[in-house]
Amino acid sequence: MDNKEPFVYTYSAKEREEVQKIREKYLPKEADTMETLRRLDESATKKATVISLVFGIVGTLVMGTGMSLVMTLSGMAWFIAGIIIGVIGIVLVAVAYPAYSAVLKSERKRIAPEIIRLTDELLKK
Image 1 (cartoon, helix red, strand yellow):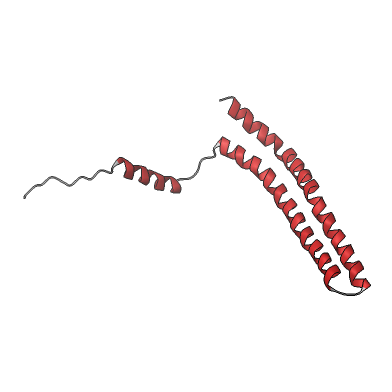
Image 2 (spheres, one colour):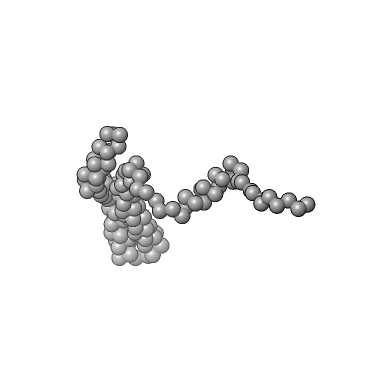
């Protein structure tokens, strides 16, 4: 048992792959052109979606408040106030899609030069 050879352990392919994945998490990320292009394209629709959702949700809540005033409280003043508040809510809900379209158009116009530059770079490869 006087074996003087050092013990050498090598990773299997599966373990080596796992070690590489862990290592990649900690290396600085390089800017990938295609990933940048996807991120820019997604950012335009994301902002428009958030704004239209805000209009839609707030409008729905305001319309629900107006309906609640009309149906639960008695008196002509509450009835009129409920109808006015409900109509305001309907207008806010109706504005959601035009707001989405307008914001999407302006965002696409804003990022168009960068998108064109990146697509030219990718198509030349």
